[in-house]
Image 1 (tube, rainbow, N blue to C red):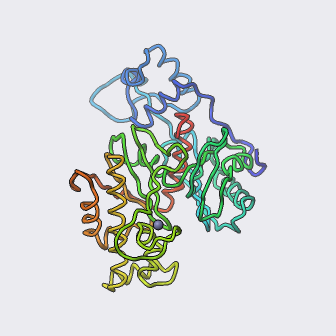
Image 2: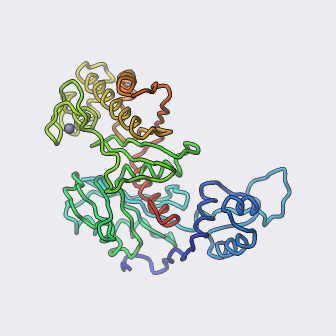
Image 3: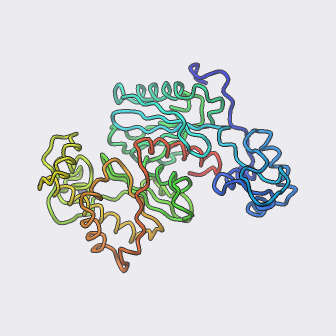
Amino acid sequence: MNDALPASFESWPELGETQGVILLELLLGGPRSRARLAEAAGLSRTSLTRIARELIEAGLLGEGELQPSGHRGRPSESLFLRPERAHFVGVKLTGEAAYVVVTDLTAQVVEKVSAPLPNRSVDAVVELVAGLIAEVSVGFPLVAAVGIGVAGDVSDVGGVEVLHRSNFLGWDGIALSRLVAEATGLPTSMSNDVHALAASLHWFGGLGAHRSLIVYGLGAGIGSGLVVANDAAPGAHGRAGRIGHSRMSGSGVTCAKGHQNCIHSFVTMPAIEANAGVDPGQYEVALQRARAGDERALSAFRSASFALGVAVAESVNTVDPEIVAIMGEGRHMLDLAPDDFVSAATEYLEQVDFSQVRIERPDFHFDSYAQGAAVVAIRRLLTSRT
Ligand SMILES: [Zn+2]
C-alpha cells in the first residue's frame, strides 16, 4: 500500500461468482423485485435470499421500493444497487498528459484531475499516475480498482498484462498495470483506450440493448474497439480494430508506414492539419478555416470524412455490428463534410445499403477515455473479463 493513500481504505469484498451475477443484473437491468431478479439470474428464491443478505451486509445492495408505483408490494421485496458504495479510478495516458477520473459503480464520473507528464520515462509516468490516483481518491473510502487506458496493444504475456507499440509514449513491452498496482496497492487493469471506450458504451452508453458494436476513436490517431457476442473483443493479441492503412485514391500526408494515400493520410488530426496547410497542433485553425469556407481546409476535412467512410465500411463488412459509434476529439469531419462520409461508405459497403447501418455519435468529452478505463476495471471485478 502506498503511504500516500488514506489509511481508511477498505478493499472490495471477496465475491463469489453468483454474487457477481446479481450485482451485474442490478447494474445493467436496474432495480427490481426479488422474484424477477431470481428468475433473471436463474437462482432459487432461497439462494437469492442468502446472496442478497450478504450483499446488503457488504453495503452493495439496498432493499425497498425505489420508485413510486401502482403496486404496493412489501417494502423489502425490491432490491437495488448502491453505486456510491464503491468507486473506481480510470486513467487515460496520452504522450503528453495523464487524465484521471473517479467513478461510482455505475461509471458516473464524480471527481477528476489531470497533469502533464514530466517526461516519458516509465518511472516518471508511474510515479505521476500513482500520485494523481492518491490525490483524486481522497474522500472515497472504498476505491475498488484502477483501470488504465492507453493507445497501443495490451496483451497477456505469461499472466502479466503488457503494453506493446504505444507509439505516442514510445513504449514497447511495458507491464504498466503491474507497476501502477505495485505503486498504489490497488488492483489495476490496462487496456487499449479505444477498446475501453467500446466496453464503456456497451454497458453504460445509453444506446439500448445490443450485443455488437464498433467504436471509432478519432484524434491524434484512429483506433477502433469491438463488442462482439455481447462481450468486449480486444482480440487474441490486443490488436483488434486496427484499421487505417487501407489505400484510397488521392494524396495526403505520409503515414508512419510511408503511404501517402491510406486512411491515416487523411483522417487523423495531424493529417488534417498537414493537409489543410496549418502548423502541427493548429487543428482549431484548420477547423475555423474550413467553417469559414477556406477551400484547402475544407478539402482536408472532406478527405478525412471520405477516409472515415472507407474505414467504417470495411469494419462493417467484417463484423456486421448492430451499432457503429464515432467518438473522439477529431470527429468534426462528420459535420463539415457529411456527404463525403456517406458516399465513401456507400461505395465500400458490400451487399448492404448505407441506410441499414446504424451510426451513432455518443456524447464525448476527453474524460470519456478515462471513464472507459474505469469501466474496464468495473467489468473485470464483476465478470473476471474485459
Ligand atoms: Zn498508411
